[in-house]
Structure formats: structure tokens, C-alpha cells
Image 1 (cartoon, rainbow, N blue to C red):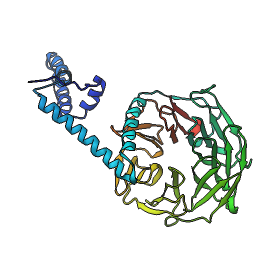
Image 2 (image 1 turned 135 degrees about the vertical axis):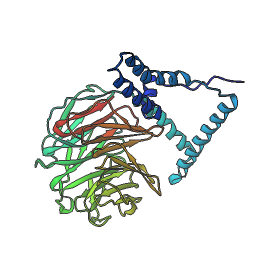
Image 3 (image 1 turned 90 degrees about the horizontal axis):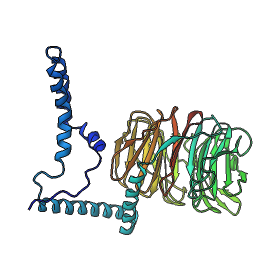
Image 4 (image 1 turned 90 degrees about the vertical axis):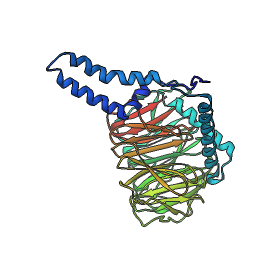
Length: 416
């Protein structure tokens, strides 16, 4: 017995977006052009041209619900979907020893991320026109951005008072020297935030009080820090600092004191372009020579895990844990690591400067001021709002909803 397809058909806009990629659309477009040209001989060809272009998508859209499908077909599809989801969950569970319960939670997060894709991105007024180099949203929901002349900006939590208020926390860096800040990251829970930048600039801010402590030039190193990564809860923090000369410096913060190890060089000495920690133990860094390195001991050591043959220079990365890393390059490509192999995904044409990741969602921003979103269940979608200047970094809340991108000339774009 024939049965009606009960799956949601989706919006006509979504259908049209997919239709424009088919051969039917290509033929219809050719017909529109051909009959439109013949209109100089007879006006009747105008109607024929329009019909050739407009009728096919309407017919296909209306025809989609069921065309000779039967109960067996529908049941087979349902079983196939369930099997595919089961295989995906099993694959996730196998990566780094994750449980099937965790895999199910990730799939639920992906569903929630789909809802966030409809949230509105908009430009935000902030009290500066200085270029902002990095941004992070803490687990407490607050936002911190850093940039030129040692500037540190703070945005209030989205669900707190003064949600649209941005304020200047530091005007000239932790050492009051005005050196540019290039990195910012927060502890688990968001009680403390670390900022780092040029000439060894380094500082720790307490979120609740706003008090900051200057740790500039740890172990007398005054190199330019190109990135900072923090793992662990406040008061029990691992801090990793990366340099343009390819070195990583590891620090351990305890009871107001920070002890530093000797710096190590994960690769060949090529400039490190990004570093990130998923927790106090697992993290990644990448360099400008196609090198991606993994640590499982909190930065005491690194092992190379790729990347070979990237078409562009590696720019930034994001991770959720061991065997999970996404690396962007300046050729518009994101390279996805699944624990053993790398898969490139073309996102755009401009350099992808910023990338952020949470369970079920990835967001990137590029040098043209464009943002792209991707969930595990879908491809990359370009965000409708485009920044007037280049975007350099982006961050998203671990719970979803809020995301913030920053860039040149004090540009801030936010999703609520």
C-alpha cells in the first residue's frame, strides 16, 4: 500500500538553494537564455522563456512528497538512517575512548546547533576603533577581546545586566607598556582570563573583581607571544604560550604563583600560528610549515600528527579533545583531523583567520569580513551579516547561542 512521506519537506528557500546546484537548473537557465534571444523575432518567446525557467522548480518542489514510494521504501530509509546514526555514534565513541552516551550527547548538541544557525548576527558598537586580534567567551558567558596598544575589552554575559555594554578593562596592557596583545583565553568556569602579546606581555585578570596581575616576560623571555591557551579550573591552571620562533612555554599557576618549564620546540622552528587546549592535558598547535602537533600531557611534549600538502599557510585551529582538531588556512580551506587522517573542506576563497568549535557546531571568519557556520549534520553556510572590515578571530559559548567575532578597526560582530 502506498503511504505518504511524513518527513518534513523544508522551506522553499532551502529547496531552491539545492535546486540551483542541479543539472535541471542548468538546462532551464540555458532555455531561458535561448528563448530570450529569440524574443527579438516574436514576443511570444518571452513567455516561453519564463515558463522554461520557472516551471521546473515549482513542479519538482510540489512533486517531492511521494512518487510511488511504498511502506517498504520508507521502512528501509528509516532503518538506513538509524544505522547511519548508530555507526556515527560508534565512531565517536571509539575516538579517544568516548562512551556511546557521550556520542548521543554530541548528536543532541548538533541538533541544538541547528537551531542556533537561525540566530541573528549583528554589528556591535564598542568603545574603540583599534584592531582586535583575539576574543574568547568564557564558560560564565562574559566576552573578552584584545588588540592594539594592549587594549582589553569586556562584554557582559548575555543573560546578565547591561548585556549590550562593552567596557575597556585595560588600555595599555598588563605592564602598562602599550604593547599589542594577540591572544586571550579563560580558565574552565571563566573565573580567570589570561592575555598575551608582544615583548613578552602577559597578564591574568580576575573576572569577578576586574583585578589584574602582570606576568610579563616569564623566565625573562621577551619574545612576541602569538598565542595563549589555558586549561583547568581557576587556581589550578595550565598556561601555554607560543612564539613566532616556533617555541612553546608551559606554565602552571597555583595559589597566586606561576612556575614555568623550559621552552620546547614542537617542530622545525617555523613560526607557530595558533595553539589551543581542550582541557588541562590535551591540545594542539600548528605552524606555518604545514605542521600540526598534539599534546596529551598539558604541553610537556608534542607529537606531530600532520598536516601534509595543505594548499595554503595554516592560520588557526580549534579542538574539543584528543583526535579532534580543525585547522584553517589562508586559502579558504578547513582541514579536519579525526584521529588518523586529515580531510580538507573548502569553505571560501579568502584567508580563514578565525575558527571556533563546540559540540555540534563550528564557526569560522575570514579576511573579507565573512562568517560561515557548520553543524555536524550540514555543510558550511555563509552568514548574512558581513563585517565592513577583515575579521581576525571568533569565539562561541560552549552552550551555544552567543558567538562573537572581532577584527580590524574595532569591528565586533555578535550572534545572540
